[in-house]
Image (cartoon, rainbow, N blue to C red; front, side, top):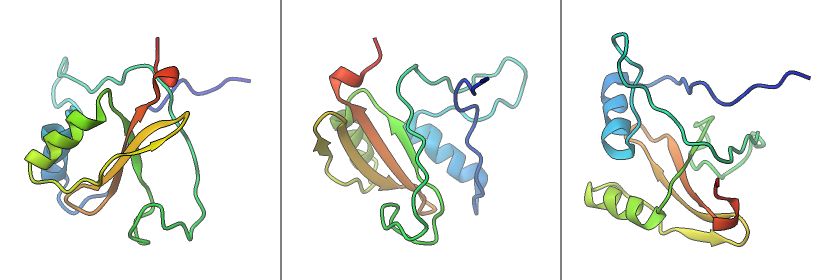
Length: 126
């Protein structure tokens, strides 16, 4: 069976797409869609990706009107949390889950939930 090779993009609606794109670029280092040929594009590092539909009634995302949540892998969750807090962004204290790693949550300026994940060292790509 042919399988997909990975996530090629994440597309979602925003009240102010330009401002929200700049927020992701400034605070999480995600390059936006190039506006010219040869422009930089965000490249993911190889590693685990979780694909998990949740029940419609889940409280995991926070606001029940939000239909998606993105989870970004990070190398050092403590440094990322400190960086975000320095920028005035509210971030929950990281929590550890044995065998999985450490997780934290925040919201972008439009209230979309974001989860940051520092995989346990045994799950890290080699």
